[in-house]
Image 1 (cartoon, rainbow, N blue to C red):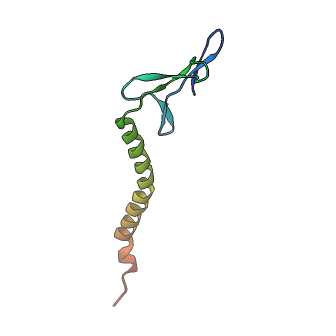
Image 2 (image 1 turned 120 degrees about the vertical axis):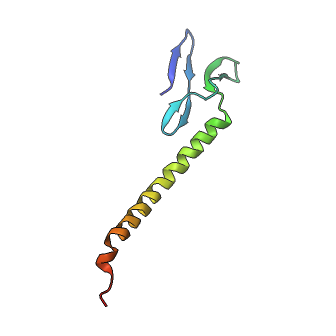
Image 3 (image 1 turned 90 degrees about the horizontal axis):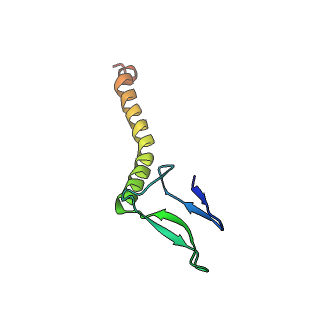
Length: 91
């Protein structure tokens, strides 16, 4: 969840990157301020995301997609390896 910092006249939000279901800081550790365009008041800060952050998010999502398929494939292979003799036709 975002951290809120109460000031005299407004609330400033600090938001992190949302990767793999969690809020995390950028790998660079750097942030930049976000300002209200109407009055130039700083309203928050966000992480300065890097290529490494994007790749980490992409790799996690690809892993999440492939894991169930790999588990099912491995289970099917083991089933055939252990049960094939039971289903071999008798000559």
